[in-house]
Image 1 (cartoon, rainbow, N blue to C red):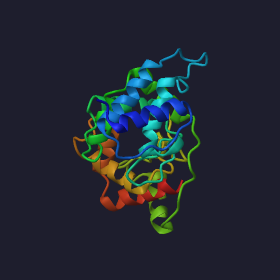
Image 2: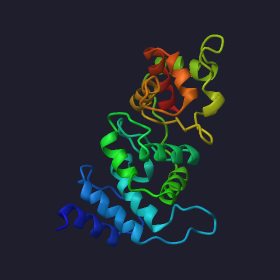
Image 3: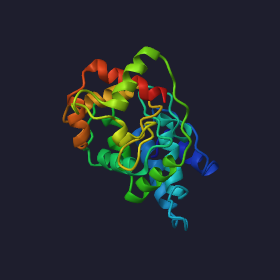
Image 4: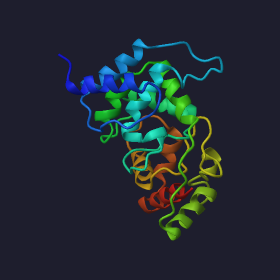
Length: 231
């Protein structure tokens, strides 16, 4: 017998097949599986422009993502990164890393490992297309002094290439490019936790960031995180 949660999700998808919406954050595993299973059954051909964002399976997966990452990927919660405007290549790599359990931060295993395991390569590419095309929320400034300290590190690095300028990969406005992620507007708490994770085996990939993070103190990480959140 299907759970009530699964039935509710299927009813929601039938009524609103394309518009991103919020769903309850504490959905049972059966609910996630039912939603993405229904998505796979409605698969269609990719549009002529090559983007897979509008595929039915992708749009239904967007409903799932919205419960944590916000409508259109504009998360304002410190625990969940904003995905709007994120670079396509980076998104694809991270979702595949979650699916392969190559990213093992303890605060995401229960959700991202399970969700990503249900995604095909085509769905992952479609989600990356979708979020890369969304308009991010503007950054938030909360501590001008700390942000100024972070700006110096971001633009100039530290010492004689002990830490390289972040602009060399992430761009002058922290907008990211290719495999280098967009950092602008991400919540400072999330950025700080990720910088810490790069010092551990929890993020297996990202050799460049591993060496950079090892040279940063917690205070410098917090300054950088505050600065990129303000962008």
